[in-house]
Length: 262
Image (cartoon, rainbow, N blue to C red; front, side, top):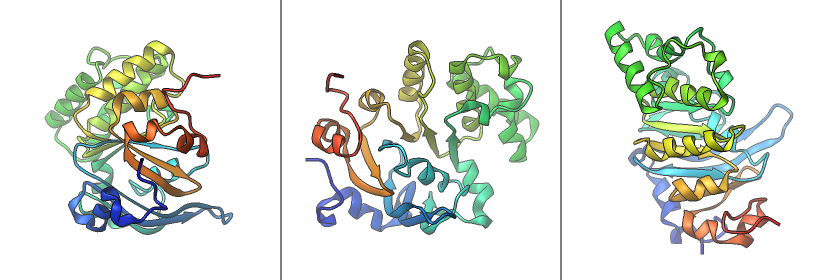
């Protein structure tokens, strides 16, 4: 059975390890957040991610997945504690935190605003105050990692959706983050671009947290799955167990990748 949060936490190694926040790359402790209209988006969420883990965050629309991700680099701030590599996410630490957390939005147009691909990818390193030589090195490496090394002089707004997605990933890779955080990375992509993105995500040698409804992608890439519903983590465990638990998935508005679509 997958690990369900209603069960005794002592039986859950992924829950008990969250009690020592300094030992993880990402540690969230008792995070709660409500929007100005009073709607509770997150309720006492605790989560720990180790160096090198690739974790899928799944759940129905409105579960709080995007809200949770926006806390990881200080765009939102709720009650509780969020640590990145032992560093607390707070106003005084934001420049360091935003260099450590590479947040890739669902719509790449939200991240691409410079005239050329090179300028978009160079934006982060430049604002980190790196020397020109280091900026060029970071941009070159980031574009190579996403297979876009020949696109530096291209106009960003002329690229295809899949190409824009790769460049948006390069914009955060150029800052050499400790963790990559994606919001619905395959949304809006055609099958060929989706397949290319899955290959890219599988090959990136970085700790990764991905919010997605693409359960087939989850099956291909991720070893651990966290289910968030109504602002609470309701299950957290090995992907093989969770993805095969049809009743659990259906109870939280999800489909198993192994179930035929009716």
